[in-house]
Image 1 (cartoon, rainbow, N blue to C red):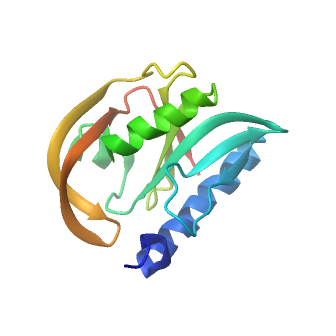
Image 2 (tube, helix red, strand yellow; image 1 turned 180 degrees about the vertical axis):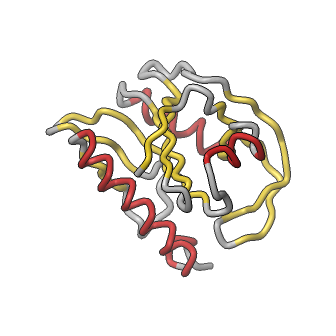
Image 3 (spheres, helix red, strand yellow; image 1 turned 90 degrees about the horizontal axis):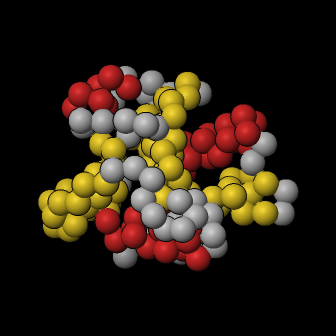
Length: 161
């Protein structure tokens, strides 16, 4: 079984994640240090300031939206991420004593939503609704029945890239 990042859609997503990484470096002076793409890491990156880890990061790129308003209406301003991924990332972040941050990049309108998901203590920073639903399994399709986190993005910072 091929890793999703090695497929055509995975490579497009990686390129778009790197756009976010370069923007974060330029805008905030933080290094977006990716986890190895050759194996299925639990988190996508850590943000580093000089020699100190500042946050653990999950980055997702969405391609089916023409505007931020479409995301807010069609998805009720909620970002769907598998709960197991969110829960594991919170554990990693709290173990490192840093927050867990989510970057949701809406590619077509070039809008980045940045949401602190948990504090360094592991306590949630935003509302997260859990629901077991059937959703797309991976960037390459398929379906999966699993518990998903619907992360409220009402307090997300919005950036035009």
